[in-house]
Structure formats: structure tokens, C-alpha cells
Image (cartoon, rainbow, N blue to C red; front, side, top):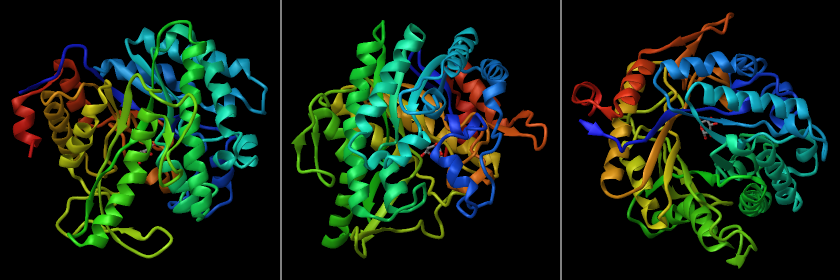
Length: 426
Ligand code: GAL
């Protein structure tokens, strides 16, 4: 059996726009209304109505054995116009955090998870040089308002994904394909993270743990050729090293900078939030990037997102964090699938890799599964099912899947039993 360290956190991760409903004042909502941008034709709309049902959701999480929960604050609710704070919305999140505590769930609170207030987006969003100061002001404000109730603050969700999806792949709004803009965004996001860290630490009355949420990918070259290895190296540099080394050393390195120092950035992490889903196999490819992602082969196990299931890669990215010497929290890991048996297998096999990393000295302290319930999966819409819990059509009733009970048993035991390892383990 795989026993986890005492006090290990178990729970799920979500984000405001994907679950709350009616986040009308951000760039995602506007983009969804244009039509044709979300693959399955859905829009976030009322989403899971979590904005109103949060207390019931947290009661259910408690019943299901969770001890922690990750959510994000919707910036566009808090600061609907530049410099104007909506105290009613602050009060809402105060109640949300209180409810978490009442249900025995330790809050992990993300300040930015993909959505920008419209006014911020209209100024150029992440490509604007004002972006870091604007978001740091919001971060400090929230840390002050919520105070001691939040022990774990996470600055920006998946800094690597934002420039790539918004400005390179054209998959997220504003759906541009422009390397220059992407690199500008990557620079400002890295600098913003440091400023947010400082603002939170300055404003919070206690001693919270603050860090980024990095989506790290285990990258492999498609072949041994020099070209493929260089392409994989470049991809890895952008996706992983740029952020890790940038925060550790306080510099903006390649590909978005030349190694120049960013004042206040160095060492701005008490913890590292790690998201991981899959691996990437990279080959040399056409400009502007000079690389392409090789799709999984016909024998590979994949999710409905088309991502390869590759637990070994999950281990590798955890192991890579060891030299940084920070506590690591798995802030996302999960699978989009219509087959809950596949999800159960995914969970057990991936937890085996968390246990392996811990036994090799990586200081992993919690596992937050993506996600609690099926939700609005960005440009894929509601069609993708990432939840331990399904949502009944029409009523939006929460219907826990077998995987929710499997996860409950693991969380309550703080261990993966031999029986589960035998049934799902490999
Ligand atoms: C992450 C993202 C989440 C969720 C998940 C599944 O990149 O942070 O919001 O969408 O992927 O695709």
C-alpha cells in the first residue's frame, strides 16, 4: 500500500469562470458571445451555478473526504472598472472562504485563472506594460480583504499557457498568432507574478504561503536528430525553465528576454503549485516556432482532449522540482474522459507517481485533482468531462461518480490500498 505523509492535503481544484456562472465582465464571456469560438457551441452561461451553490458543494467535498480545495477569485467581479472595488463581491468571497473552513477544507486561492476584466483586456491585457502593476494592486487588495482566512495564495495559473494559448495558438481570446505579442505577454506575466507575490506578502496580516501555479510538461524529442533535440530543448525552455529559473534567479531569460534582472522577482515563491496532465513529444517544424508537437501514436492511451496518458512524465516533472527546495502542491492533475473507469485508473496510476516522487525526497504536500465537477472547459466547452462529479442536465444536481468514492477512500485512508493498486494500478 502507498501511505502518504501525515497532514497530506487531498481535494480538488476549480476556477471561477469554469464553475461560478455569469461572469459577464471578463474577456472570456465576451469571446464566447461572438459565436464559433467554443468547439461544442456551448457558452459558460450559468456554468455549475457554483456562485450560488458553493456551500452545498463544499459540504459534498467534506462528505467525500476532502481536506483542501482550490478555487480562484474572479478579478472582474472584484474590480469591475479600473480602480473601483466592489465590496459586495469581496463579501461574497469572504463567505466562500468561511464556508470552506466550516467544512474542514483548507483554501488554496488563485488570484488569476485565465480571465481578465474587460477594462484590462481593452488596454492590451498581458501585452500592456501596465499589466504587472495593475494585477499586483488587485492581489494586494484581496490579500488585505481576506486576511488570515487564506493560508495559501497562488498568483497566476499556468503562466506558460496564457501567452501560448492567447497569442500563439489562437485558442484563447484574443486568439492572436503573433510571436512578438506572445513574448511580450510572457515577459509581463513573469514580472507580474513577482509583483503579486510582494503585494500579497506586504498586505497579508499573517504569514501566508505564496507561489505560482506552473503547468510543467515532460518534454521528449521525437528522435535523436540534432534538429528534433534542439526543437524539444526550445519547447522545454519556454514551457518549464523560463518560469522556474526566472523566479529562482529573478531574471527574464530566453525566449522572452535576454537574462535581464527583474527587480523584486528573485525568490518569489514559498511553495510551488504544479499542474500536469500529459507529456509532449516535439519535432523540428515550420516557422515561426521551428517546432511541432507530434500527436500520440495509435497505441497510446489518450483522453477525450486527445492528450496522452503518461504517468511517468508526471513523476519526471515532480523530480525536476527537487533542487528548488520548495514545498510542492499538485494543484491540478486529471483527465477529460467519458469513461469513469479510465478516470479511476488515471488517478491510481498518477498517485503512484506522487508517492514515488515523495519517497525520493521531493517535498510534495498535497494533491488537488482537476476537477471537482464537470465544468466549462474553455474553448472545448462543456463536452469535456473532467469531474469526479457529474452535473445532471437541467437541474444541475451533483452526481458523484465512482471515481469520487475511490478518491474519498484514498483521502480518508491517506493511502492507496493494495486492493486499489491491484485493481487499477497498472
Ligand atoms: C488547465 C487549466 C484548467 C483546466 C485544465 C483541463 O490547463 O488550468 O482550467 O481547464 O487545464 O484542461
